[in-house]
Length: 82
Image (cartoon, rainbow, N blue to C red):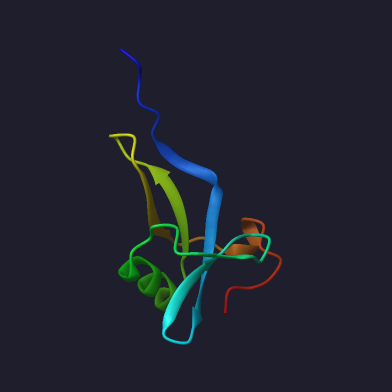
């Protein structure tokens, strides 16, 4: 039986920025990439708490996005978060 790959996806880390009344994800190159399936609660919570969001593969092999408390300068962002 094939083992399901799980864990963090290292090249999918995003900053959350507010645009009007919406929260969008920004990649490390500074490009707005939209929501990528992250729920409003995750994006809004990450923005208010000053956290990054990162994709991960859960135990069933499904791609999800969650909040993480990482400094953006340590993960390749050329600017401070707030």
